[in-house]
Image (cartoon, rainbow, N blue to C red; front, top):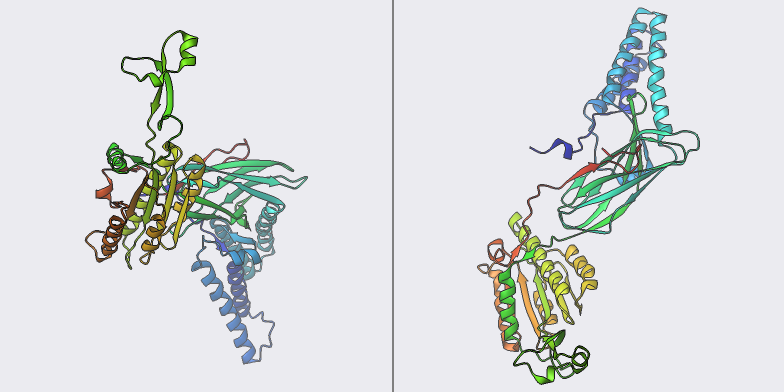
Length: 487
């Protein structure tokens, strides 16, 4: 069972237009039964027209009230044309029934006192709608969010509400945001108890998005039922926004590093010599028996009056050429889609590890999915956002141009390149024939291509991206201002 705090259930409201049509049809029918008709009583056609109009208005209003359902996914075109909306709440519906009962009693019994009571009851109903509309006017909403987040990571979204009225404050305003993706829709809300005249309050909610890719936020719905809760007035603001969700970064196991080291030993490194040594300087240390005399650092030796030698570390960082094959069958299952996400997560983890740990090396990333894309440049922390952007928007396809991407990978003809192919193809399927052709071509060219199949049973030895979290949801946190709190 899902947590009720993680859901936004649609409020039970009824359109006021349906109630008005229902009341008008009931009033016309009542007038006809009492004989108070404005039409000629001797004309049968006009009387039928009177009855038809009464029944039509009554049935149309009943259909709107009892069968209508409020849609949570806002129609953007309708919102642009009619941003202000008015609806009657469940409490308002009960209040309206009492009003109609008093009106019927006044008409049937011809009691002026009941008509006066009906007028007293109708006053708060109309006043509630007017005050609620006043609370919505001249407000500005600004959303602040990060441009990129990791998949499954909690992040904060700030909503600022500015009251641009000079004399009248805003009370009990609810801001309902809208996040939509191909696989989910979320409706986080923030409640502002009071925003004074010419003041600004900020609320915050926390969101956690599991689907990878591009998430669009907006429009924002500002609503209130202040002060009596009988009528709900709302105003829709566009307030567009966009967020890119990166694939989850996991952890590479020690087995991956050991096999990577063995693969590096098989690759002949022909880097140019830099100075007298082909290694990289690491530190100065005391002379030990057996050290080469050419490694003595004479200037430090003279300053310390002790033999000091230079210690070097061998430069073993190879360039990385990573090819990602996001193949999907014509009718993919949930397991096939999960394998694509696993391949993207593993490829992103390998790329991030290479950028963080490698020095003076190059990186090639090729993605064969819905679109053939590749990137080549220097590895380093400054290139990670651009790489993760490519992984975030990548999509699987049954017609991926794997041969074109692999051919671009083979353009890196340096002898110190470690080539890795990550694929979602099953070795037992007919689609795996292309993998054998690619491997045969790589062996023929003398450029070995390491194959990694992105299936859970194959990657569990090299990769761990386990997450104990549940389904995507949002969690509210208190606002930044005392009178603007998130719920």
